[in-house]
Image (spheres, rainbow, N blue to C red):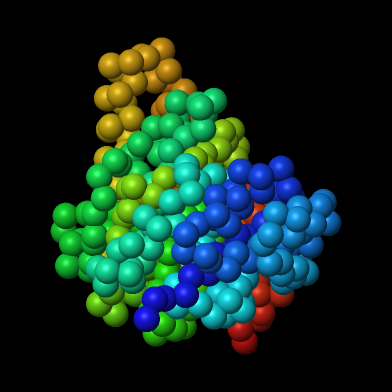
Length: 314
């Protein structure tokens, strides 16, 4: 019996993205249910999604959480496989879903994520990051591969990722978390013996041009959650090892192609590193300070955060 497919697209003020994101998904030969979740942006996103043919689900902004919102959406769809997308990840063609879910349908993996390539006008650093994290060759990884892949073993991105729903059920689904719900769900599944596939043939265009301040804030959030969930992602490899590999390759490429950019590259890397290190102190910091350092203002006023804070203090 063929498996049912659902797609969740999590949005806030995303109307301008939908014409590029939704139609290829809706045209898929898999005939998926496409559910757009909107955190009460009231900018026409919901109306545009419905016009294009997607189902919609609106939640209060105060209830939004990267993990728990996706958890609600996957349960609402209740399909055998659920694909998580962000609206700014544009499928390269109408066959992205077919290529993305193939490793799951074949029984090779319980998670599969696609290849991200930069937009044409992206800066060097965004293009390099996509090149570094999303090579052109597919692979399948398990917990036994940590010695080869390091922390990349459980790398995943919910900008374009497919999940076997019954596998997610085994680990309690996506956790309520500031960010990186994909990373933590992957780590939990690998610990249960599941495998993750990188489907390089499933291509989406997705990149951002962040300032140094924005990079600091993004990596503050990463450091914060990785400190909170350190035991879950401790496979004997460290983030610093991956960071060193990134920095070395970044310098090599700039040395060959554009040496004048090296000083900015060092500042760019320093902003990320400093944000990450300060973020690891985050769970001990007062909420008003965390709000100023974080890149996600909505989370610190959310119901999930206040419930977690109360539980930690009780």
